[in-house]
Length: 404
Image 1: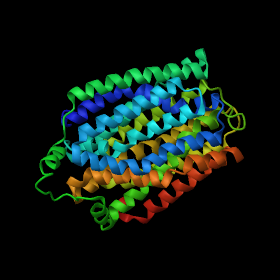
Image 2: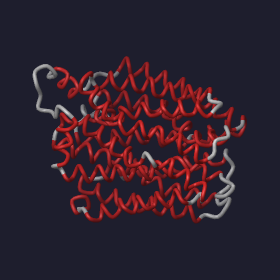
Image 3: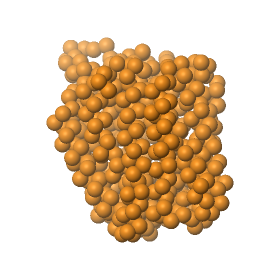
Image 4: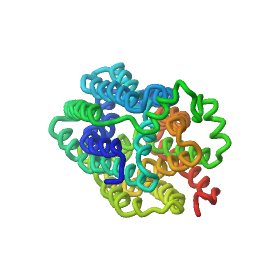
């Protein structure tokens, strides 16, 4: 950690306490929506609104980051997006409140690609994996503590308990924003781009030029597709997993008990991130991705085949799926970042933003489609997620440069 850049250290430290209530909000939000009287189709539609914003906003984020600086862009969209989301969920009582909250939730994704670039730009390549792993560990520890949220739900009921969780998230977000505003600095690449704005630069000056560069790089194109696969399957699992666990037509578990699932996922993810990911050599990353996708498939199969009230199989499926989560959010971003760094370091923000856009474009219909499929049969969204993981597995098997 001593070798990390200043921005990575500050971000990692603040992520530890901020991620806890935010992860609880994201886990319980669909159950809260159902408590307000929304059916699965409406829930899927509201989540789709967030994804529609994710299609176009990351492109804007990459442009603004190059034009006005990484820190300024990140702070603005994080503040408006997360405070707006948690604030609206705290007061939500009608369907249109949820729609506004989901619109706010789309705003932080404007800078997700910029944020990934910002984390790694002042850190040497050999230490970037540990940065992304630590960030994921913060979210995993938050999942480990989800039973705290489950206790609130059990004591106060779904609706009131979720409002308390949202209020906690508002306070944590405000604290995080103040600390980051004071302590974060503009990255070295960001300063270089800002200083060269009026005298020319070797970086791609438009997204058209950036896309042309990507089209010439087959490795980056392949990683774009793998990122989209992870986003598609992850969106379906995140949206409909909590519903499936508590649905009387599916596993029919109690709403307070299902908080054990993020905890189980967290334990296995901590093991992988602590003992496996830091020891991964560059030539082993492709194999690690392949194992993760296969494990994710096993998790989906276990989930849909589990009988009613089967807590053990539900936990087992979560453990299997945790490796897919680690691959999508800790291994793949490092591989993309390092690959882009070899091609054009000055284009990091734009290319990472395009990665987010491409992933959102591939997955934005999934919550709405998944909601319709869920109303027909609760297992159908997970079968669709399994098909996407199969496609990603096939792609990994066909690319020798990823498997060597």
